[in-house]
Length: 220
Image (cartoon, helix red, strand yellow):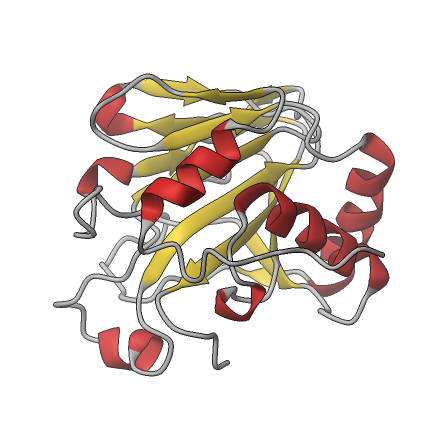
């Protein structure tokens, strides 16, 4: 397999990452000055989606949040950390690296999420708040998050969309559809306009995978 030229590091310099992503056939950039958000349908095929779903089901557990906010219903999904030595996981991460050009050493392990009927993840940002109680615990070694790459693995019968509140943009689940966004503004500061809501599934089950990239090489 040809070795990828992943030379864009952590993604803190966001312009070349955005240029690379938008140059990929089929990628659409959401037109907004508030955040940098891309959508690509058919990023991975349905066969690969099914393989990843099976792996999420094998390891899923109740999801958690970094800083408790007193709302027991804030995040009600299940989460599964996927094996980085699994050939299926390696292939997904290869495709993500090809798209973004981000250095894989800055990436957290690929994570899967499962949402049953009524489950959701209320409005949140993916970066860690510097004033958060557990900021040092989560960011002391690898820094904060820079880019998010998320892929829907299926389409539930109803619900389960992702809403970006600051721009009132709703993205509906579809097997293989990718979302990628910069968690920073162009000047590198954290961008609160990236707040998004994993809306309730009303019928069926929703599966997604997410990979986050960090300022520094990942140290688990």
